[in-house]
Length: 391
Image (cartoon, rainbow, N blue to C red; front, side, top):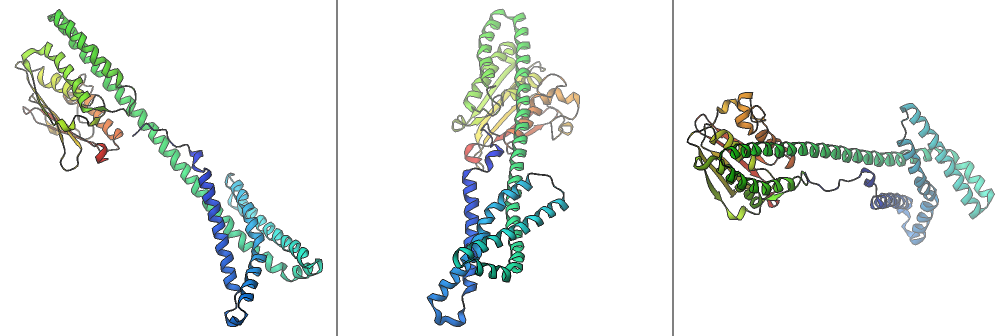
């Protein structure tokens, strides 16, 4: 998802679209005129030459000028019908009346032009001879013209509906993504403040140092709430994680050890803020803290050789859990597992479940998260995040 301004459906019929529409109509009229000219040529009398060609051009122009101009007026009529909810019978009756009117105006136009060119008597005689044929022809011309305009209007409506549906889906996804980000940030603050409270009881001086570090971390969290589609570099996220680990090390001391395996080429890759920290927090709260001897957290970042995406791994050597009890959709299958898998309050299941849904929304399902765990074998989360060159 991105934060660019969505297209307004009313802008789907802009000046360029109107120009292309009427150019297409003009092209269809020109093609019809050319076909009429060709049909008027008598190839069996090729000796007439240029005179025959000019005669065919004259006949085609005299016959088609009126319906071609009148077709322009058919469009607003069809659009008016299109914007109203008429029943099928009413619509058929209105089109039938319009077809008769089209034929009548065509006859009247021919009569006026013939009167101007050849006189009223010739025009009246021609009208008497061609009235029935012209009326039938008018109906047959009106039907494809009105049908073509209706098809264009239906296509425009379908496009507007598609754009509106896409905007609604995008707005819903952005709202859900904002809600998920809102879950992650207070969740981090809650647990960190609990750690600081515990530290003040043990070592006031260490707690003061931790509070100063926490202020920098808080600034990062607040900055990351600028927008749900914001990105930070991996280097920025790792700096935040280092501060968090330093704060936790004041509380856990030598019980916490950290191993880093970072590819320098990945440090400028972009990821959503608060991607790694919930995973590290999950490992500390449920993998390291419960153990008397503590444990080790490993954090790695590398470039995926096949896809050129960013591959991240956070793992701990804690107690782990039964993989059979992990639900493939939200990473938890029971309240008792939610505390470990979710990385949040016991039974909350906020961390990993929110990250999984966040990736599904933020990267249109292209990002991946895999969990590997077993009783006594620790807990490992592998992330794959697409980058600009892989999108």
